[in-house]
Image: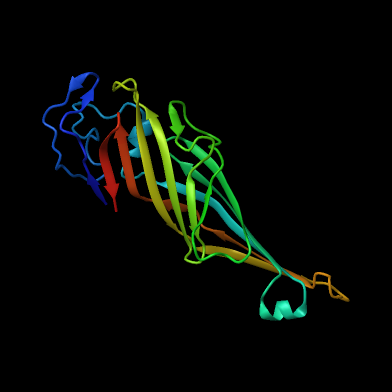
Length: 235
């Protein structure tokens, strides 16, 4: 994981000019005092910022499950595996430890699962610590589900209150992570209509699977203070 410091030549904090900024400095995320030549002699005040810049920062995805329901209107549809109606429902929870956030996420895909990413947002954060804010307004993180490839891309943004440390008050963070989905505990069920006649539902099949708890490492993380980026994580 590479962290690149992106300090401007002159950056004002608490109305003081920062001297001796090293624009070529790099260090592992979470190593050492993490104020990155801000002219501060102590780390961030808020637990929000300190947890964000910690090398151990991870989002958690829990209770991930999906259910696919296929409805066949004739024996021919069933034998050819071409249902008249098909839908897949996904649900899970996401936590962001920096803001103490818990969001519920659910979405429905109607028809066959697309090979292109399925884009959706989680619901609004159910819990969030004082002095922190999500950056998607009434919605939670933005997600891109590539179900065929078993991948889930997470795009999140939040703001931490540092008013006790710096002028301007808050630092904004945006991060992205990629989860590899591995499913287990798959359960299937099916039913067939007795004495079936054309126009009736011939059969229905349902399959549901769950995924282990997933801790998502950021592959991109950017911190911005007063419009100026001060660190970036890539990789």
